[in-house]
Length: 176
Image (cartoon, rainbow, N blue to C red):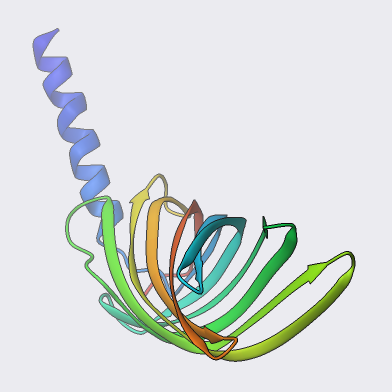
């Protein structure tokens, strides 16, 4: 019985390491996102969704296109944001089912707020700096246990330093 446990453990270990060594051509992330928004030195919480598509050029470098949207209420105002950003991503893929990564993205952040159905919106430059940790479940599925990003925006003539945390599922396509 003890030998059978060792054999099963070794087979699982080697199958996980073999699975983790292959680099996918593309990765699509779909998940829940929480934004700790900062406006005029007041922080408030917003909930939303985060989607990204990454193309891997090799086992450690690629490009990522991110979309996110968040909604919340602050002092009776309904507030929402949408962003689209693109930039390089760096991954550490070694003999493990866990893949940490880091990215820098630049793009456009749109924000709007309203009171009693009256709203105003504006689009501004946005920048994101962050990283993620994915755990491989199968050849085509990973779980993003956390993605944390610092987001810089400038609305109403002031700078906002925002924090975004996301988690969800990663679907992988092709092999490098």
